Length: 147
Image 1 (cartoon, one colour):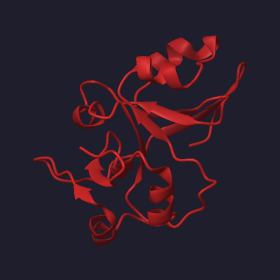
Image 2 (tube, helix red, strand yellow):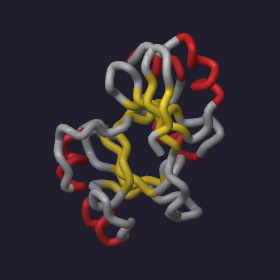
Image 3 (cartoon, one colour):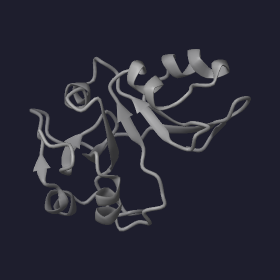
Image 4 (cartoon, helix red, strand yellow):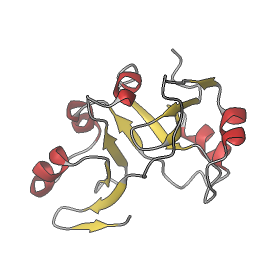
């Protein structure tokens, strides 16, 4: 499997694009390359290799479900639960950029998603739009809910 390709996949939250190339994802979604894209990771071990988790929030992050955290280093990560079907996909790469399969600030369009993916990964249940993840911004002392 080539991680630089753009995969259309049912993520743990919604239908999304997944790739190791964040610039390619930004181009597809027609948004500024300066806007950061979240990374999905397969475990807390992988998360700890990429960022420092503020001590005050370690328990909360470990116990969170379907939540994305923007860490003090400015990068955002979501750990995919092992019991989620998306985990078997993300485990092959250990981490990958992930974004919803739509134009920036637009609703999901199946034709757009299929046309812009290099590889389409369909599960037996097909694709479904689910609730997007909650987003929290962390610094060393505070947490703020953004969505």
